[in-house]
Structures are given as C-alpha cells and as structure tokens.
Image (spheres, rainbow, N blue to C red):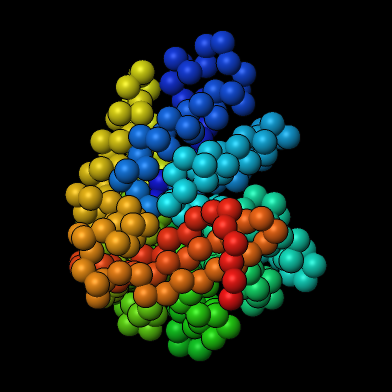
Length: 314
C-alpha cells in the first residue's frame, strides 16, 4: 500500500506555481494538487516536518493547512508526521501532544536512541501509532544500526524491546527499501507489525523486492515514495505525472479503492465475512476518531482513521 511523502521543496516545485504566489502559497497549492492527484492510488500521506519547519512560522501554518486539507477532502487517508522525534520525559510528552493533539496526525516517526522513554508517551494515545526507526535506507545506517549487541544486530534489539512495550495496533517500524534483503529475516522475529518502507524510487529501492520480502499474510507494508512522485515532472502536467508514478508504485492497490469499500460496509461488493470486524472510537471534544479494521478478500487488513462530528456512546 502506497504512502506519498510530502517532502515539498520550494526550489523544486514547477515554476508555473510560483508566479504571483508567495513561497507559502506556492508550497500549499503544490501540496493540494499532489494530494488530489495521488489520493486514489495511496492510503497515506507523510509530510516531512523539516521541509515546513525551515520556512518558520509560515511553514508551520502550511503544514497545518496541508493536514486540514487532507482531513477535509480525503478523510480516509492515514497521515504520518515524519518528525524523527526522540527525547524523554516532559519533552517527549509535549512532542506527542503537539503532533497528535495540535496537528492531529495519526502517526509519528521516532528515533529510539535514548531508549523506550522516548516512545512510551506516544503509546498513550488510543488510535495513534508510534513508528520507530529500525533499519533506515541511508548508507551510513551501518554506523550503528547493524552493530552487534548480544549476538544480534542493534536494529533487532531495538525492535524486540519496542514490541515488549507495545502492540501491533500502536507500533510500526521504519525499514528501508534499500535493505530489502533484510526484510525477510526481520519478518521472522516481527511477523505482525506494519513496516513503513522509505527509499523506493529516487533512493533506488524496489517496490517489488520489498513486497516479496516484507509482506506478511495481512499485507503489513506502507511503501513510501516521495521525490519520485512529487517531482515526476517540472512542467504544468506535474500533478498528472505524479498520479501516473503513484499508480505504478501502488503495487498492492486493487482497481477499486479498498478504503471506499470499507467506508461503505453495506456495499454488496464486500461479502459479510469481509466487512469491518472492529470499531474503536476515541472522542476529544467535538471530534470523534473512528478506526475500522477489515479483512478484505485479498487478505490485507487495513486500519482506516477519519473524523466525523458524531456522538459516541460506549
């Protein structure tokens, strides 16, 4: 299942969007068009916070508007904050509050270098996910991540510790597409958690190899592509080009969106045994988050999150 990374760099967006617009306006318009064009082919969007933080206050406003645009126009989409946060105590709690409450992300990427205390505050939010960096796609990941500790590579030690304090319902792991040869052995000790897999496309990772080595019986993969989708064209057809790349990359996507089927469980296309089996609601003021898990005919289990102004009674 495809995740589109929104690593939007003003210097790289088409010139046709820059004319008559401020930096913030151009970035937001680019995001909107990419989101609209690729949403039919993906299940998640992943804004990289660095690309918005570097623009200062305006950038944070763009980030907030981007998340709100996805919620308002493509409410079935899962939204990940690519933040790589990693601190302890009150700082970690404030990071969790910022990303889950203020910005309303569904998940956040975390760096576990300071230990389990960097992660536990994020696990206190029902219906949200901590996505812990395990084995990343960059070349220098071997500096630390593959070093041995007790006869095991460090990334395995990290993952096993994280699995002790969490469940597959609130924990995912980052495993890079350029490490596809490791995915099969990682699945041996981590069979149930979803993997967020960056590195497909511009970094040279192969979606086909990732699926062959990393998929479990329920799918278990969010395959991320950022630059390969965003900058498929620098001309006025950039949105159409992005959609075409997304469609090719979304190897696990069926002709008709799984998400629409799950949102309409009464549809005759879904047999009774494949309709949503669990519904979890977490209310905060006027907002209610619904999480539906359904096992569809292909065997992929999908968690869908969206907001509705509804009354919830336990």
